[in-house]
Image 1 (cartoon, rainbow over the protein chains, first blue to last red):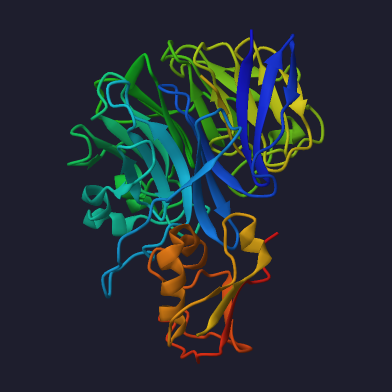
Image 2: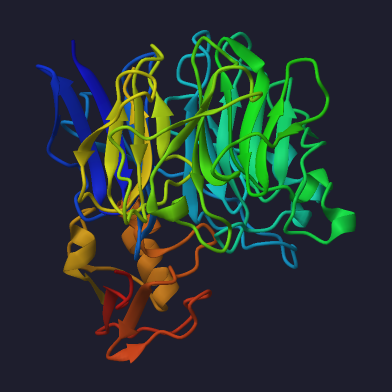
Length: 362
Length: 89
C-alpha cells in the first residue's frame, strides 16, 4: 500500500512516498523557493502550494495532475487600504494555512494569512475574497504578531458536519469561531492563560497565542491547542478552555495533532521553553495522550536522543486520515515517520531544508 | 516610447519579455505592461500597488524613490529596468 507525505520547506515542496515497505523522497517542486503551506484537497485530488518568494511576494499554484504541472493562480489580495487605517499594512505577507471546505461545498477553500486576514474561495482557488466580517472587527487591532511582525491565522478547523462552522487559531489573537459561514464571529479563547502578558491581561481572549489549534473530525467540537504558555483543551459543550498541566518533559511547543477518530488521543512535540526553542536535554520526543490529557506517554524510540536541536514548528506534525501514520519535520531538516501512532519512529531524511509543514495525502 | 526590461530572476516564475510601451511616468509605463500581462503585476507590485519591498526600478540609471506612487517621469527614449534587490538567503 502506498502512503504519501508532502513536506513544505524553505527551499521547495517535497513528496515522500512509502512503497515496498520503505520511504523515498521524490523530485522536489519549486526547488529553491520557500513553500509556506500546501494542501491536497481530499475531495478532488487537486494540489495547492503557497509560495513566499523573497523578492516577488506570495504566490499560489495549483496542480490537477498530482504535482506534475502547476498553474499560477492569483493569490489572495487585500483591498485598497483606507487612508489612516490603523493596524498592519493591508498587504499579504504569507499564506499560513489552507483548508478545504466540506464535501457538500466543492471548490470552497479557506486561506489564513499574515497579517491576519481570512480569505475564502468558492472556485478551487481561482478567485479569493477577504472575509470582511472578521477583518473589520475592531478587536483585530488588538491582535499582534507572534514570531512575525504582524498577526496571522495559522489554524482553520472546518466542521466536517457543517461547513458553516469554522474555528480559527490566531497568533496572537486567540481562537475565533463562526457558526454561520463567516457572517458573524466570536472569540472563544476564554480560559486560556497568556504567561507573556502582564498578569491582569493574561486571561484576555483577544491576545492569546495558540500556536496551533486542531480537532478530531470525529468530534469537531472538542478543540486542542498547543499554546505559547502550555497545552489547553476545550471539550465539547464547554465554554472554557482547560489548561493541561500533566504533560511531561515540557509544556512548551508549537505542534499538536489530534487522532482522526479518537478525540481523546493527541500528540505534542515539546521544546525547552520560549527562550530556548530546542528539545529538552538534546532529546527529541513526542508526547501522546490517549485520555484527553489526563495522562501522557513520552515516545522516543527511533528519535535522536543525543545532541538534537531540531525544533518542530506548528505545522511540522501530522497524522494521516487512518490514524496510523504520524510525521514530524523539523527546522533543521529532519523528517521522521511512525507507522504505529508514535510508538516507534524511523528517519526519512536528515538533511532537508528547514521544514515548515508536513501533510499526509488523503 | 520607453522600454521596460525585466531582470532574468523573475523570468524563472513568469513570462516577462522586454517591451516598448506608452507612458510618461513609471506608473503609467508599468500599468501598460501589466494591462497585457496581468500575472506579472503581482511579482512587481504588492496589494496596494506599491513597489514590492525587495524589487527596485531604475529609470535611465536613476533608482526610483517614489516606491508607492511611482510618479517619476519617463522620456520617450527612457529605459526602465525592473530588478530584484539583493536580499534574502
